[in-house]
Structure formats: C-alpha cells, structure tokens
Amino acid sequence: MTLVNIRPATSTDLPWIMSVETQAFTGGWSDQSWSDEIRNHVVLLASIASIQQGADVPVGVLALSMVAGTAEVLRIIVVPEARRRTVGRVLLEYGICEMVQQGASEVFLEVSAENQAAIGLYENFGFAQIDRRTSYYGPGDDALVYRWTTTPTNCPSLDGEGPTLSTTRRSDHV
Ligand SMILES: CC(C)(COP(=O)(O)OP(=O)(O)OC[C@H]1O[C@@H](n2cnc3c(N)ncnc32)[C@H](O)[C@@H]1OP(=O)(O)O)[C@@H](O)C(=O)NCCC(=O)NCCS
Image 1 (cartoon, rainbow, N blue to C red):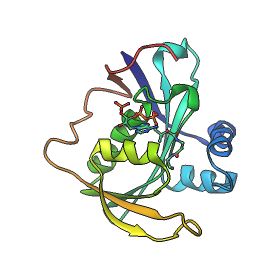
Image 2: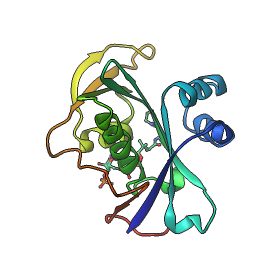
Image 3: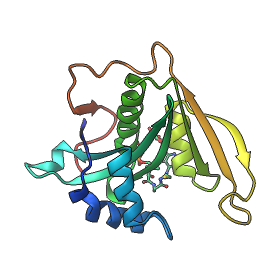
C-alpha cells in the first residue's frame, strides 16, 4: 500500500519544484511562473509516507487554477523514481476534488499528443478528449484538449480523511 501525503506548496518549496521542473521539461516554467502559481492558484506537493520517515520529502507536484467556476490542470510532475506508484493519480484526485468542493463542475487541461504517460494518467482518471490543436507546441507537436466533468460518484468526499490518502495498487518502497 502506498500512503501519499499531500500539502499545499509554499515559496520555500520553490528550489525543489524548480529541480523537478527542469528535469522534466526543457524551456518549461520559470521560477517566477511557479512563484506566481503558488501565490495565485493551487499548488500541491505529494510525498510518500513510507519513505518520509519524519522528513517531508516531496515526490510530486500539481498546479491547478480555477476561474469563474472552471478549473484547469496546469502542471503535474512526479519524480522519475516514484512514477507508476499512483502518486500522480492521487495528486490529481485530491486536487480536482478540492476544485469540486470549491464549486467547479468541470476541469480542463491540454497536453502534448506525444506525452503518452500524461495522456494515460488523464484518460485513466476519466478525462475525455474534446479537441486537438495542430502544431500548438511547435511544428508537428499537437496539443490535445481534455475535459473532466463531475458526477455524484467520481469525486468522493474528502471530509475526515485529512491530508493523507492511501492507495492499494503499489508496493511501499520506492
Ligand atoms: C505523467 C506523470 C505525472 C504520471 O505520474 P505517475 O505517478 O507515474 O502516475 P500514476 O502511477 O498515478 O499512474 C496512474 C495511471 O496513469 C497511466 N500512466 C502513468 N504513467 C504511464 C505511462 N508511462 N504510460 C502509459 N500510461 C501511464 C496508467 O493508466 C496508470 O495506471 P496503472 O499504473 O495502473 O497502469 C509522470 O509520468 C510525470 O511526471 N511525467 C513527466 C511530467 C509530465 O509530462 N507531466 C504532464 C504534463 S504537465
């Protein structure tokens, strides 16, 4: 069982966030962009309880925004050594359900058509593709636009669960 702890990011997390950002993306978000996200939107950090051992060692980050009742997934990164252990899914579920609790009924995102891991994560979560923007990220690199809509059952209440969510599909050890 993997226990994933989730907490809001603060400006003191910026060095760690920038280290995973630059590892995951070339020419990605700047320090200033992430700082703006932390200040103006929702940025959540995930850590795995089993490797935490008293210290808060992040393994994933998620950035979301909500404008006029419409939420958007802006960024999600899990460190390579913690991937395929449900951290991305748990982060996404926690973040999206927070948006739903704040009044969102649908969530949008866009992703490179080349990014099979992210597409797998989003489709597995229940996002449906609604558009394709040809060469949006550059010549030959299309963007896929996805939407997720809430139903009475796809976002169970987080009340009483606190910041720790558990999943049962992966081992405890990174
Ligand atoms: C995309 C990403 C966040 C997924 O995180 P993760 O913690 O490994 O994802 P999970 O373990 O929660 O996977 C949940 C489901 O997503 C899908 N998935 C995850 N990684 C996948 C991959 N490499 N290929 C295909 N499907 C994948 C699967 O359906 C998976 O369920 P399963 O493991 O039972 O098959 C991670 O690969 C990552 O950080 N990539 C680099 C950054 C990035 O591209 N972010 C997205 C754009 S901002």
